[in-house]
Amino acid sequence: MAPFESIGSIFGLVCAINVLNYVDRGLIPGAPIQLQAFVQSVLDVPPENVSVYIGLLVSAFIAAYSIFICVFGYLSIRHRPFHLVSIGLFLWVLASALSGISKTVASYPLLLTGRFVSGIGESAFQAIMPPFIDQHAPSEKRTFWLGLFGAAISVGTAIGYSYGSLMAQTAGWDIGFFVAGVVMLPLALVCARFIPMRFDHPMAYDPAVATADALRRCIDSHSSTADRRASVTLLGELASVLRSPLFWTSTLGYAAYTFTLAGLASFGPVILIGTGVLSDKVAATVFGALVVVAGMVGAPLGGYLVDAACRGRGTETDFRLVVATRLMFGLVLGGIALAFGAWLAVDSAPAFLVCMFFSLMLLFMTQSPHQVSILLSVEKPQRGFATGLGLCLMHLLGDVPSPIVLGWLKDRWAPDCGSVLDHDHIERLNPDCVLHGKTGLTRVLLFAFLWLGWAALFWGISYAIAHKKLRRQPKSVVLFDNYNTPVLSRNDSY
Picture 1 (cartoon, rainbow, N blue to C red):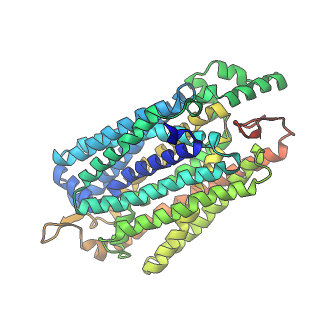
Picture 2: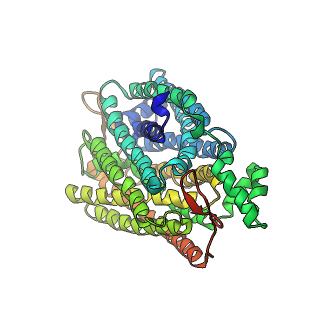
């Protein structure tokens, strides 16, 4: 199939799939009032307790995603990446159907199952694609391409918010799930049948990696790479990745970052409505617009800045790592400062939205540098597994507890902010929320922003580790990073 003979066309396909993945993620938070009403109706729970069940839907997705992303990351060492991706995407289509049917049969457990299966499906794609892009993208643009991949996340999330809100108010949120599944089906078929073999080889059999291993054995008789590649075991690979201090600090920082962003994704529109910043008719759309523009600008810009700082030294792995960790540390500090500015300006909608936008933009700029820090913390054949394991830990410490914790805090601090039926029998946010819930909602917002301090701490340590390694690194022998790019690959694992 000629359109997918080039890496550029495959990258376009990958970005389209990533957008659709995050459209699916945005469907539930994009229709908060309708989903709250659905949960209250089918489970017969009072409005003041509904947020925990909404948070559980998000957490079920992330829990499945976190477990299976390690499985698919490990399988990518020995199995064709797009074969694994296609399996995941077909599961994703099934999950969309289950989620849509749940409304017809009035079943919260079926909706919960659909979200769980969706997490399994997406995990294959997210474990495999970042190292695939870093391996095959043009060497002088690879971090920028990772940024574009990250921008697709923001685009999909924002579309999901707006699309979910529109469908919930018109055809129904269940139809939103059905349509997403129909759109994904042909993309899954392309991944299964039409990706050329030269782009669809397991990481352990990458010819560039094989060449590097051969050279390592000649250069360094003490290298353990050959032995490790000869017998790939799950526990062996796990132990190897977990021995990297940089892997831990980068991952823990990203978990804290994700805790805050996941909480905002789940309850951002409700907080905007309840604090009086925006009305219920536009809150999801405006919040989605903030996210999409901040992500579209921030994610590629972060990647571009890494590539620009490494220009002329792009083959120096240690230098690239220092640039990436230094940038993500500085960016998260700026994002925290602007987030607190937004919190202080909550009584002024324009000031709040401006501060929130620039805070999100700086935070999204950390995505590509963080991905570089994870990829360069381990050896090349392990990068898919490290990506999966890092995302697993990040979600277990970030996405999974965040909606539940913040949902619980919202119910306790702002118990009047559930959904009610108005006189026209239309689901609305409880009017008492604006009168009595604002203080509680601003406390929830402050808690989420304070959590970003952990990201600053761990990413500061990441920069210190990378900088120390660069200063101590002896002059290395140049080995091959991929088909086009040499890299200083001795001691490229931290």
